[in-house]
Amino acid sequence: MLQLMIFGGIGLLAMVSEVLGFSRIMSLLFRLGTLVCIASLFINYGLDITWFGNMMVEDRFSQAFILTTCLMLATWTFGFGRKIGEDEFRNDYIALFSFSMVGGVMMLSYTNLVMLFLGLEILSIPLYVLVGSSKRNLKSNESAFKYFLMGAFASGIMLFGIAFLYGATGTFDLHQMSMQAQTGGSFPVFFHVGMVLLIFAFAFKMAVVPFHFWAPDVYEGAPNAMTVYMAALVKTFAIASAFRFFFLVFGGEAGIYSTLLIGMSAVSMLLGNIIGAVQDNPKRLLAYSGVGHAGFMLMAVIVNGQVGANALLYYSVVYSLSLFLAFFVLDKVLIHDDFYWSIGDFKGLGKRNPWLAMSMSVALLSMAGIPPLGGFYAKLFMLKAAFTNGHYVLIWAGLIGSLVAMYYYLKFIINMYSRNPDGDVALNLTLNYWDKLVMGLIGSTLLILGLFPDLVSALIRF
Image 1 (cartoon, helix red, strand yellow):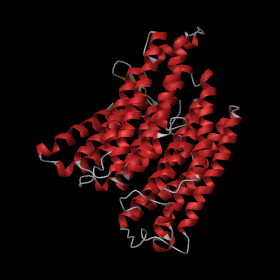
Image 2 (image 1 turned 180 degrees about the horizontal axis):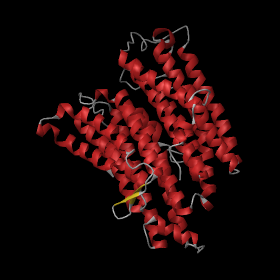
Image 3 (image 1 turned 30 degrees about the vertical axis):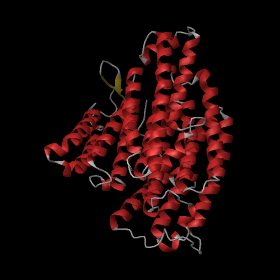
Image 4 (image 1 turned 90 degrees about the vertical axis):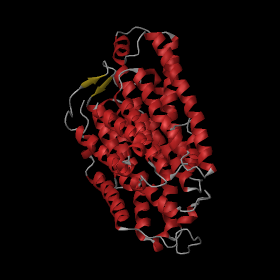
């Protein structure tokens, strides 16, 4: 796959750029490489091409998600990556981001459990370093340590699950597992043990209940650029790879594992938003909000099939754009490094910098599902798919969770337009034309996706 070669090549070049003397152009190469990956996907779009002895396949599903994640990465580079090449984002970080994208592409394209595990590890290991990249901040170092321990735990669970599945089926290939499942033969007990372990490993990367506990601490301690990368792209990689597993093995049905997935989805939508409603730190608030959104996105794995794929693709794009816009504002406002951030830091922002306040409002309203922004159709598509398949528990959990989320999103917005600012963080905030352009484009895209929701869903046709 050309995308693996491009991101892998950029990562290797970034590692030796200081020695070869072209370190100053690595940020440009990173951006150009991302754009080339986007363009390359249109060459064979719609064709099924196998790689590495049928262990990976470039099909319509993987192409659509690789395309959208590369577009999100391009958006990230223009919003946060403008610092790449400076002291904060040196070329070794470019290498780490590139290698993590290699792992993400593998997770979107695998047809073999070995490639799934390798993709997960290649994705995760660079993130352990990136989370702790703010070396002088103890909070960042603590977050990296927590993420490393929990990530190693999740990798071990996945490896045990894969071992049980191999012992039960005699193969790592998902198509052969599917053939055994379709013949109607009963699997031994340890196949189901392996399935549960694999679901738990996916759940950790998705940050759904009860494997969400690492997310608030890690998101709070990591630099903003790293946080939004994990919250948007890594979550998409994890949920899309789980969707791919159930689609290839069970033909679009979660089967007997639906009860477990429904429970995790419903509790995530409720608990994530309820805890988020009492948060004062904006990054922790968005972390718990992300738990609720992960519960929504998990609906697509339960529903599966064409409807689930379309809903998941649309939701991941809208949620990622909303997060980018929100964290872009956070990066401008939360300029002190003591980590004692508060929603009160945004008080009076509407008066001091209307552009930032408006951008944050658009992001939060989209995540709340308010029309005509894209977040409305993102939730509507998920709820409609759940209704069609008779998952009424998910519908009620989604509606209640959305109402709770709407409360703290609106509280945040009202706080920004308060007439009595009591903090000095929002003082003297200035934006250049590039900042305004990036925020304006993201906000406009959320509006366009809300007015024309079929623009994204048309990318996938099985």
